[in-house]
Structure formats: C-alpha cells, structure tokens
Length: 275
Image (tube, rainbow, N blue to C red):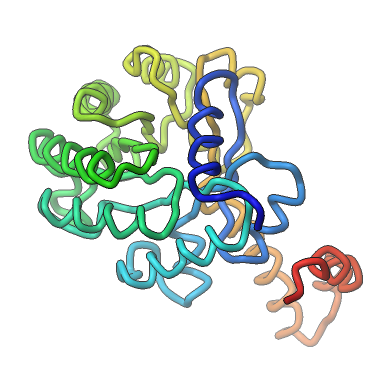
C-alpha cells in the first residue's frame, strides 16, 4: 500500500464535494482488492456481507470482530474505506463515542451511525437520544484530529417505520448534530430521493441501490445524490451463485459450475498481492 491514512481520508472527503460516485461494499480482502482493480475510488464495508461470511446473521457480530474487519480492509487496499458501523455498538452517547474512537484508530476514512435500536418492538431511538448519540460521534471525531467523514443514518425504511417525514426530520437533526453525509436506506422513488436531497441542504446524500432499479446513475446524479452504495447486494449476488451451484451438486449434478470464474484469471489478478 502506498497511500497513507491521512491521504485516503483527504481523498474520501474530496469525492463528496462534487459529482456522484459509486462506493461498492466488499466483505473481505479479496472482494476489496478486486473492486479496487475495477477502478472504484472508495469502498464501504457491509455489516450483512461480513456477518454472512462468518456464518452469522446481520447485526450479530461483536464490536471487536467489526473493528478487526475494518483494520483488515483498510490494510488491504489503497482506497478510502467507509465503515458500516451499525448503531455504534452502544445504547448511550458515551458508549458511541468510545466505539467511534476505536473505529478511527482502525484507519477508516468515514463511518456511519444508525438510529436503530435492534429491538423489533421499538426499532428507532427517540430523536433526542439519536441526536445525542450523533453529537457524541462528532465530538469523538473532532477530538481525534482525524478527518473522518461522519454519516448520519435514518433507519425508518429498514426498521419497519417507513415514514418519510420522520426520516427527513431525523436527517435534518443529524446534520445539525454534525453529520457530514446523510443516508436513509430503503428509499427508492424519485420523490423520496428528492425529499432527502432537499433536506440535506447541500450536504452529500448516500443512496442505497441493492436491487435492480429503473433509475440509472445519470438519473441519480441529476436528483442530486452524491454517492451510491449497494450494501450487501454484492455479497448476496456471490451467495446466490454459491447456493445455486451447491444445490445442483447436492442433486448430483455439476452444471452449477457453468458460470464459475476461471481459476487462472483469479490467480493472475491476485498474484501481485502475494507476500
């Protein structure tokens, strides 16, 4: 690796200043390096993709496992890495600040904090609590002296509370609390996207596109979105290929290997990374 952590962070912030870019989500060293080889300018982790690779459900990984994963990906690539840092692995603001400080030490260029509780009966933190948690993350970043980008996430559409007005109000509050970039995963329509971009008032907006969409990158850019992530979609695509091949094998057939990547091609790509 040739770029320093400081350079990666500066590059990452510059990407958010204009235009619209794709920030794909690898789940391990190999997928991160392959995406870098395709010319992407930054990467973002996926809590779901990493959890599945460890035989766990999304949200079940410990903070220690996530921190180690962040370090692994940061060290695997010259690209800036944005951390899917879930809800900060803490219920209170003080705990969020401690978690954020540890994530910064891993070398990430950005990190997101969700307002989800993990409790299906009461899935979102009250706005005042969520704002306090966002402020704590902001203060932790500022105290570190590191130029880490803070992403505020309103989880309404993922948490079974698809209230656009509430999501917009939350995002505005998170911006006021110090979020640099705003994100409401689960919004899909032009009207929803436009409402979030308007609420951001010039701050960059991240849009999740995890399934086939009628919107093109050109459409998304024209709506004012600054970056597009895919969450666990690449990991799900990989799992889809694996599951299809494994099921045909269980049936005594081998045709599930028809679309497998050639081993020689993979070896040729990864050979330069050999220690």
